[in-house]
Amino acid sequence: MVDVKKAADLHQAILGEVSKIVIGKEQIKESLLIALIAGGHVLIEGPPGSAKTTLANAFARVFGGTFKRVQLTPDMMPSDITGFYLYSTTGNSSFMPGPIFANLVLADELNRTTPRTQSALLEAMQDYQVTIERKTYPLERPFMVIGTQVQTGGEGTYPLTDVQIDRFLLRVMSEYPSVEEEEEILSNIDRIDEHDIKVVASTDEIISIQKAATAVHVSPAVNEYIVSIVDSLRRDPDIMGGPSTRASISLYKCARVSALFDGRDFVIPDDIKRLAHSALEHRIKIKTEAEMDNVTPQMILDRTLEKIAVPKSNE
Image 1: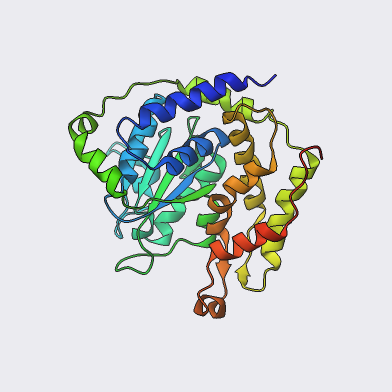
Image 2: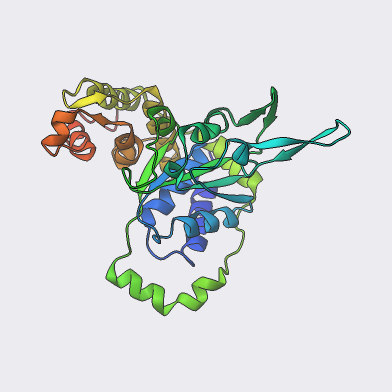
């Protein structure tokens, strides 16, 4: 039996602690927690100084996990992320683990580094392991990568490849705070700077909730609804490259967690609709002529959700 109350209580406790030092950003907080329990990763886009690093740091601390931040630069090598073997003059070697060996890894400004270095994250994000000099090292669970991205096309940026982007379960936007939120930040800056938050869940508890999420029921009708949305996007005339099967899997896994946090042991269509934009938009590649007509992934997804029939609750 799924312990929905335990999951819902943990959900509120974690969000409550993170909110002590991060004002606003409710959708990002929710997305980070959903992705953690779903066993995936999150890409955050936004301008500098929009609390991306603070969010990741606070998020790691509330569940007692280890946190590492990697500031990506053009001259960084893959071994700077994964680690390397240090050889002595006697011929002996010892493995020096990189920052990828943590429960939560913040890959800051991921598109500031070259595709070769970006690819160092692929194996870790997909298989939860790192291979160095033909030896494979498993990563500790839970494991999550939070990638941030500066505005693509800016000086010194390398756009993420489709393969890299597809590894992110969700993509969210971090904007500047509203006037009211910024006033609240200023009024509470001394308390925020203290980072006085506590651990409210152990890594073992997170793993337990992850297992509980896999027991949440998804009906055949909801499964069909997910597939219909993704298939319709692939057939859209304005899209150059449609979402892969990972898109369907992302919606499926995240919807189970969303239901669990909402106190249910079953998924409803609203769970899918709520998560569709953050799970699918970054996987949509628009044709050049459509971009010239100001067509956006959000517009395409909105019209897709409008035309796909929503299954009834008793289906």
